[in-house]
Structures are given as C-alpha cells and as structure tokens.
Image 1 (cartoon, rainbow, N blue to C red):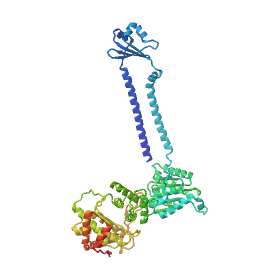
Image 2 (image 1 turned 180 degrees about the horizontal axis):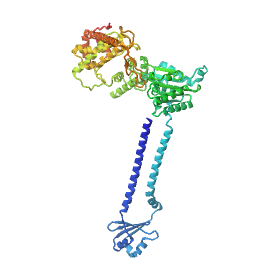
Image 3 (image 1 turned 90 degrees about the vertical axis):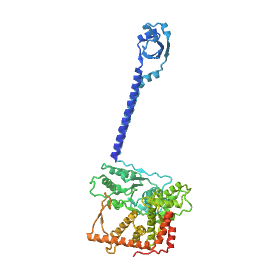
Image 4 (image 1 turned 90 degrees about the horizontal axis):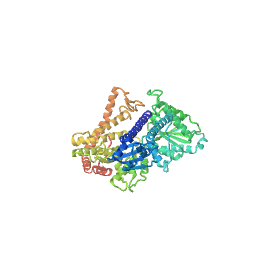
Length: 621
C-alpha cells in the first residue's frame, strides 16, 4: 500500500513538472511573439529619413531616449536609433536636412524615466530566469519532502484522542453492565494506581473487547478515554501492516515508545485481528510482514516495566482467529465480552439515541424494544435515525411511534416498494401465503406470537410475517425448532390447498427449513435415532476463512440415516402445518381477505380474528 502511495506521489510530481515546463514554454512563446511583432515594424536609415523629409512624407517624429519613432503621412510607422551623444537635428543635418526642413512635421521629445528604461531592458531577460529558478526550487522542495518521508517510513501515525466538551462517559453507554464494571477497574487503576500496587496487584497489560459488530466496542473505548482523563492513543491494526518486512515492527516500537513517554496512557488498537491472526499456518513464511508485526507486539506487551502505567486495549469481532500467544496471561489479561443487548438494554439504548430529537409524547420505547430482538446498538441507532427521516419526509413536527415501527421493517427488510406493480392474482397468492404462515404460528403452542402481517413488498420479499418471542431467550428447545419448521411450511401449504399449485414464493422458506433441520440433526443432537452426536468436521482455515468447508467424518450408511432423520423432522412439521390450515380454512380466508383490503394487519387485529374462530394452539407430536 505504501509503495502504491509513493508511486502515486511520483506520478503527481512528474505531472506537475511537465505543467511547469509547459508554462515556461508558453512564456517563451509570448516573448518571442512580442519581439517578432516588434521586428515587423519598418526600420529606416537616417539617409532614407532625410529623403522622406525632403519629400514632405513625414507626419511626426517622437524621440524617447535613443529610440526614434517616425510616423509617415500615410500612417505607416518606422523606427531607427540615434547616437547617444547627438540629437535628432544634428543627425539629420549630417544628411543635408536644413532647420527649415524640420518645420514641416511635428517633433516631440519624451523624457524616459530611469525605472522604465531599466524595466524595458531587464524584464525580458530576468522574467524567464526567475521562473526557471522558481521551478527548480519547487522540484528540490518536493524531493526533500520525499526524502523526509523515507526517513519517517517506520513511524506510526498514531492519533491522540482529544477530550471534547461533550466527552463520552459510561453514562452514555446503555446496558453492558458487566463490561463497564471490568473497564471501570481499569480506569480506577489509571487514576489511583497506588492502592492497587500497595496490595501487590500487577498492572493489567491488556484488555480485549470481544463482541459482534455494532455491540459498542469502540464506544466503550471512547468512554474509557472520557472517564480516565489520560492520554488515549487510538489507531487501526491495519496501519501497522506494509508490504515491506520490518516496517510494521518498527511502527509498533515507535507506538509503544510514544505511549511510555506519556504514561499513564492507554493504547487502543481497533480490529486487532488484522495483525493478530494465528501464526504457523505455512502461508507467507517466517518473514511474513504480518507475523513480524505480531511478534513485535508480543514482545512490547510482555516487556513492559512493572511501574509503567500503559494499558493496551484492543477490539475484535473475530477472537477465534487470534494467536494463542496474544491471549495468554501477561498480554491480554482481561477479555471483556460484549453481548447483544436484551430487551431492557435495548430500551435504554433507544432512549439514549432519542435524546436531542423531537419525540412524540406517546412513544413507548418498550414496544420498539420488544420488536427488535437481535438488534445491536448500532442497529438501534440506525433505527431511530430512520424514524427521524420518516418524520421529516412526511412533514411531522415530531417523531411518532408509527415512524419508529416503520423504521424497524426498513432496517430488517429494506424500504417498502409500494410502487411495485403486481397483478391481482399475485396479490391474492401473497395474501394467502402470509396468512398461512400466521395461521400456523397461531395454531402451535411453541411458536412465537405474530406481531404483524404485511403483503407490502420490501427488499426481495413480496410480503412478510413478523413473529417475535414473548421474552428474551438464549436457549431453544426441540419443540420450538419443530414449530419454526411448521410455520415455515405454512405459506407452502396455504398455496397448495387454495390454488392446487405452488409458486416460487416458498423457495426461501424451504431453504431455511432444510438448513434448520440439518442443524437439528448434525449439530444439536436432537435426533432420537442418532442421539447426542455432532456430524461433520469444520476445517480450521485461518487465512481462507473459517467454515469454508466441512469434512465428512461419517460413513455412507450413517449419511443415509442423517438424511432420513432430516426428512422426518421436515415431514412432521409439514403434516402439522397441513392439519392446522385444513382445519381452519375459514380463518385463513378471513386473514387473506383482510390483507388484500388493508395490506397490513397488526398484532391486536390478528389476535382478535383468531379469537373469533376459537383457534386452540396445539403441540406437534
């Protein structure tokens, strides 16, 4: 990357030199044109001038220094030079012009100032020289800059976090209670190291923030910077890596030397997996630049002086690929895991991002939090921002509950495609398809409740059924998975029952159901026949990406049994969906017709329809 940048700078310098030479060439052409135009003026001899005076052809003679300009009666102009010591009359007298002959035309003598004279003499000579010297100075200056860059090639461009007036603190980070407690100890150590050292506690060398994208790793680092009030150096791990071996290691040394001078201080390295991936994979050899950089990081972290108050913080969403030496005690002593926010944390995060925005008084953030399971902090921030955009687009003075609910669907599925033209037949098929999903979900005890049904196209989906769990859960049971399989087949069954045919609209449902059934058998050990065993060994390819391929670690006969168990789970779910839809055709018709009329059914209206038909949730046996 650095070589590419240097090549770009060299190319730019060459273009600028060509441009400067072109300017000089144009200036030279300009001066040559002026001189050429000057040369085109007729030059007379004193003998010829005397003859024209005798013939009364001269209209005016103007003298400026030694230059004599003659204007003839036919408006033709001519020039000639006189001797410095002699006047024009003396020069003409030598060629026989009498004083009476000088009275036949106007005679003017202009006084030439010294500055104008010297400017006229020196400017045509000095201007090109000045321009040439300017170009040479600029070229040498660029060369000097390039040389300085060569000497600073091994220096790191680390940035010192400036504390703004509205600095980020732990109060600005919602949720993540355990993570903030871990980091609060780090802040306390930097502020009051003596009480820890008196107890014989060692300085924590490193803190590794681990979590999925958007969970707030960088935000927590900014909060630590705001709380600790110590120099906070931050950079990305990719800034270490160069194509030249040794540059990254040199930059690591420069970074830690800078931080030690400013101690107590914090170094924050974002995306540490860019240089911290596992070594010894056989790719790149021992002189691989990334490995050399990692080696230097390991040495610097383990070589800290015991009294040096410098802590390294790093963030990654791929802790599984990090080198074991980087994670051992003495390097990254603390590993702070940032979980996805639960419903309470999501509500707090939404309130934080709603600050400073005009919100309607009747907004219930709890309802928004319920509908956003699996949303990270960044997703929730985007949700509130999309709600503000909706309100501004519709001309509302404040953000409403409806704006936020619509933004959930936009973040999940994409913007509504209301302008998409579909036939009445496709609209009817889509309505029955989504009604089938919702009806099967309402007919199963272990299925999640339906929150919304819509046949408005969003993204690649022609319609959608939004079903969400009643409460947060980290574990799923086999009964819940089987219910999910049946709900996935609800649209397929409704199409087959009502139209005696199936469409491509069920392709994604079938794909997801097949993948879930495979995981139930091969990963979760939920098959009664095969028991608690996992099948298939995932290759551990660090550089090529994990889970790139799976090694088959079972026999062909066992593979047949696996296929049979997968089919059994899917067939049980399919039959359950058929029973529910066939038994409740009237409810299916009512839901589908309401969808074709309104395009959207909310949770309250859907539950009212279901209660009207006295649908009793069942369990798949």
